Length: 87
Image (cartoon, rainbow, N blue to C red):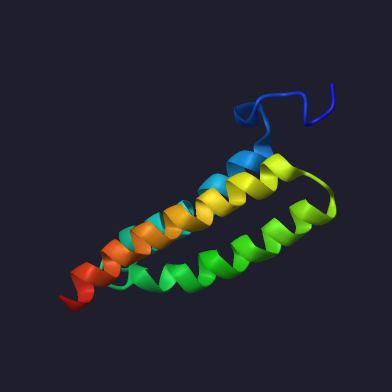
């Protein structure tokens, strides 16, 4: 079975792309503080972009799509942390 034939939740790279930014934010929020976790956007965003480019290079389009979703999730969580920190 090719990776494109299986559903996304059976593909570990798609799951990694979706949750990498969320995991970075959660670790920072838990171990440092919620107010500082807004900086996870820089870490998760850069890692996500390189993961996205690698997925496109290997023609793993579902991994690339879920990596973009993960970057958006990370941006939302980071925005919440920035809102808590600065307002």
